[in-house]
Length: 230
Picture: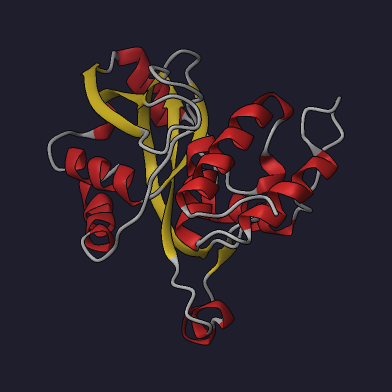
């Protein structure tokens, strides 16, 4: 991965603000990764449900005063399994990665991404630090890895119905309706924070095992905004 690509990300970072996230469930959770391929950036609108890509000059959301936020996606190699995965994040994580790209050749370095903050804690942040140099075998794996076509993958996600998967009740299904109703009453920034802290991009992505944490976080956000279930 060339550092020039991350320089372009930095140009976006310098003009924007936001909350970034990686999918680590609880305080102290971490993952060792090797960044691979080129980062993909897009602007999205959040409305308490799946993010909607910004339509640019003709965007109906922008026309109503709903400012978009930046989302970034990149391929990584999970060091524990040496398999390809995607990480999606916002401005704060992008800022850190673009800074690291100035100092390191990503193909030659293992990084640790660590979550600092418990599930539901709105102060959660993610720390990315260089861990060590990659081994010869790891570098060979990165060079030969079949990376995900991020743009195509995101297009497929947009086309998929964002409902319960029906796989043994792992998702909440109808239970998401109450979350959607309550989130719509909160400011956009509070909606973004709720999604980010749970490591999801849509209410329909919420798993039943995270229900208590999701409810507690929502109640905290409602209290901060002076609202309630009503």
